Each structure stands twice: as C-alpha cells, then as structure tokens.
Image (cartoon, rainbow, N blue to C red; front, side):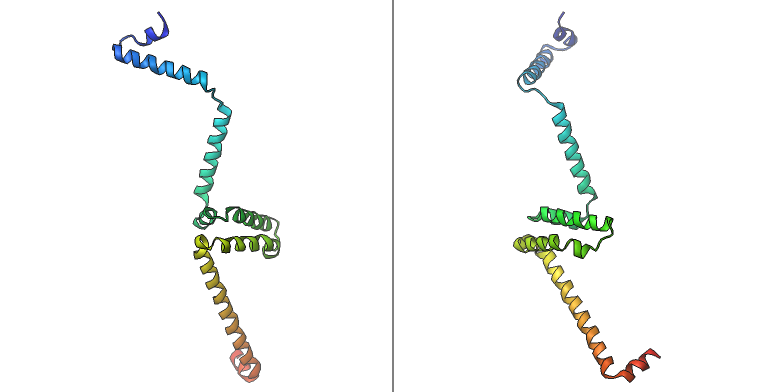
Length: 152
C-alpha cells in the first residue's frame, strides 16, 4: 500500500482525491520554487523588530517618520541620543542635523505643517517672554528705588 492509500483509509473517494491533489500541488511547489528558510526567517525577524519599534515609539516620532523627512528625523534622533549618552551639548552637537531636518520639513510643509505651526507659536511665546523680562529690567534700571522696595 502506498502512502496516499494508507492516508485515505476511512475517507470518501472525493476526500481522498482532494488530499492527493493537495499533496501533488505541494510537491510541485517544492520542486519548482525551492524554499529558503533563512531568508524567510530573516524577513520575519525584521518585520517583528519593526512592529516592536513602532509599538514602543511615541506618536510624534511615528508622525515624523511618516512623512518625507523620515531619514532626516532618524539622523536627528541618533544625534540627540549620542549627545545625551555622552553628556554633550545637544544644541551644539546636533545643530547641522537639526537645520537639515527643519529645511526638509519646510520642503514638505504640506505634511509637517502642524509641527511647523506649533514650533512657530513656541518661538513667538518665547520672544514675548524675553521682551516682557527685558521691559521689566528696563523699568528697574530706570527706577532703582522701586527695585529696592520690591526686594524688601
């Protein structure tokens, strides 16, 4: 008795034929398309790593990587991480990659507009705070007695 006969024992004729045709299709697939398990495993590992990275990333990072400046953003992230790990001045260390990221974002402003708008609002708020502080300092410089009375 051959393997297909033994496996078809207790099956109807149509079930047996279906099983035989599936077996033949499987043999034909194996014969025509050799499988490379190492490539398949590598692809699965890469896909799993990408999913894990995406799950652990913040919404902002996912947004930034979703647009045309993904590579610039990744370079910026790496620079900041290196700077933090080496206790370096991140502003100084990452000045060039930050400028490149901003330039890229402006070139893709249709996508990055919400971030650019928020950045502009933050800059304007900082300018108002600095102007307010300068104004108060100028008043104190003009009226030294008032500054002394505030200290008491």
